[in-house]
Image (cartoon, rainbow, N blue to C red; front, side):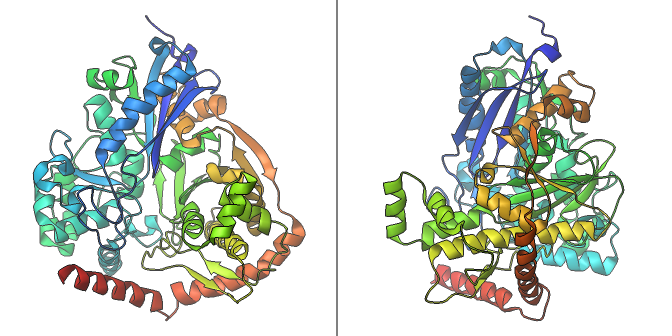
Length: 559
C-alpha cells in the first residue's frame, strides 16, 4: 500500500522527565487522532540504584529500558486510540529531554544493562537534572575563559553542569573503567533514534546546544587534554557519529522497531530533537520575538532570532537549532513544577490534603483557590526559584532555594503563591537578558501542564508584561516531533511550512493587567536584589552549604 505522505498520519513521541507520550497526528492539518502516555517504571533514580546502591546528593539517573517500553506500550496504544490503519502512518519522530547522555557499547547496548556494571551509578543514563558535575563544569568554564575559547560566548559565557561535556568529564574522573568501556557517550535523544533505525545519527540541534558543537566543530583536542590528558579523545572516540539536521531522515524504521511499535517497517524516522525546540513548531512560533516556554518539571525557553547575538547566561545559540535559516536561542529554569510539587509533598499540613480530598480536587488546586484572591505582595514573601539550581542566567547548580519574609502568620497558600511568583520572576530575568542583548521578546508562547493553572498564567503575564499565547495541543512537544516527522516523510518542504499547516496555538489568551504589573515591579526589584546578592555577589553561603552536604554524605558513606 502506497500512501501519499500528505494524506497520511505521523507519530510524535515526546520523552519527558517522568514519562513518554505518543501522539498520532493527521498530516494535512495537524489534528490529533489519538494519544497514549507511559510512565517510566523506574522514574528518576535520585536516591539509589534499582539494586539499592545509594546515590550521592545532586544525582539524577534513569534506566534506558524504560525508554524502549514507551515504544512498546505507548505507541501501539496511541494507534489503537486513534483508530487509524497503521499502514497509513508515513513517519515517526522523537524529542527528548537534554542533555541526557548514557555510555553504550558499539552496538548501542547501555553499560547499565551489563551485569558487571549494574551496581555502578556512572553506567546509567544521566538525566538532564543530574547536577553532580558542577565542579567539572566550573573547570571547563575557567579554562575556556583563560584560553578565550571562541565558542564560549555562544553559551552565554558559561557551560552548564547539565550538559554533555561536564557529565563526560565527571564520568572519566569518577569511574574511568566505565568511561573506557564505553564506545559512545550518546544523548538519549540520539540513542532512541538508534533503537528505531539501527543507525547512530547525532542530532545537530542537541549537539549544538548540549555538546558544544558550533560552526561544525567541537572543542579542540588541545582544550580537552588541558582539562585532563585522558579526556583528549572524548570527541573523537565517544561522540563520533554522523550529524543529522532537524527534519532530515535519520533512517528507516527497522524490523525490530516495527515489531515493538506496530508501525510499518521502512517508514521515515526523523533526526532526534530536544523537547522544547520541537515545541516551537507545535505553536507555529518560529518568527523572531516569539519566546516559547515549555513549562513542566522545569521550563525551557527557546526562540528564533534573525541575527547572532551574545546573551549572558543563555543556554546557547545555534544556527538552525530550531528551524533552518534562523539563529535558535535557548535559556531555561531548572526547577518550576518540581518546586511546586516538592512543596506540596513535603510542606503542606495534613488538613490541607483532607480539605482537598473532601472537595474532590488536588492539593495544588486547593492552594491556588486559597491564594488567587490575594493582592500582589499581600503574603509578604519573596522567594528564589533555585531549588534545583539556576540554569539561566547564572548557570550555577550549587545555588539553592530561598524564601524571605516567613512569619508565624504565614500560611501554606502564601508560600505556594510566592513560589509561583518566584518562577515568574526567573522567567522575567531571562526575558530581560534577551531583550537587553538585542534579541527582543514580544510574546510568550506556553506549552505544558501548567497552562491549566489560570492564576499562574496571569501572574506570568503580569510579571513579564507580555501577552501569553497557549499551544493548544494536548502534548505540545509530541506534536512538534510529529511535525518534523511529516517533513522527513516528504509531506512538506521544511519545518516552517509544516508548522504553519499543523501547528496549534491560541494567541494572547492572557494579557498583563497594568495595576498588577506595576505592583509586581516592586517585588521583582526585591527578587533581583536577592538574585544578585546570592548569585553574583560575595555571599557564597549556598555554595558552602552544598560543600558541607557533600562532605557529610561522603563521611557517612565511608563509615
